[in-house]
Length: 296
Image 1: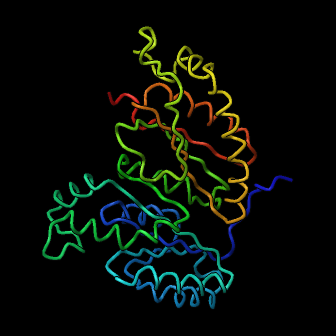
Image 2: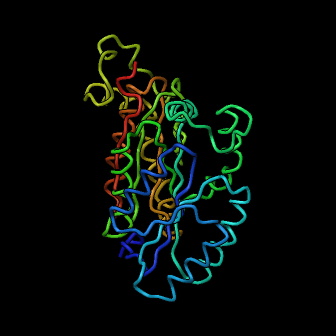
Image 3: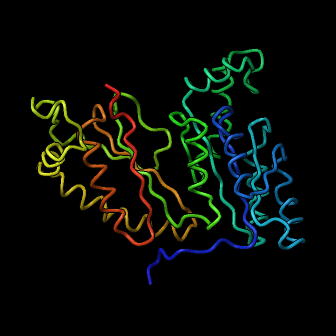
């Protein structure tokens, strides 16, 4: 039997939903409610364990509880850790979902809504974002799932939540393989980052320049270059113990970012090949996203 065999969720399951203000917490909360989760917003993190204790005393009353936390609590991280330690000691499964987005997008959302950032005080919106990122940094570092909503509309985010937390229980392991261009910035939600700029760039081959990494001609050019095939082989092998570790730690989602200069040729071809190979592993679901394809 595979070490990645599916595990049914326990009777009571807790999800901590947090992240940057304006990154989509409300949309995510509504999506969870639509799937039957009981969502609690505005709960002080100190009361997480108390809430779960009430659930435990009434078996079957609430099977899936989502608690939405924001950065207005200055002691968010320490209080959350204390509460989750008690939850863990009680044998209750929990995960932390963190929503991220670029400062540029968040500023635009606050400006469009004509409202201040909750932590900006007498300063500007970017000041509030900077304070919030600093406050939430340790929370993000320990999150089980990080979703960057910069390029997602409300429907895209709702679909992502549905895929991760559907009624059939958590997906055993869902890998998001993302190609990107370094000149457009590194993805904020990348768990693992691969730089494939060591491969000769098809951009400098006139007949390949207008094509993309999804083209068979570009794919063959990239994969047949010295070192490319060996890189894919070794990267997949290196990921196998990582995926086993994710399973043991009850983590169900990871983003593998593969970057080249513009995100059009090399990173696309390598991402497609990595996704093909990883999808052959047992009980692993792979999704491919080409973030910057068509951007130039």
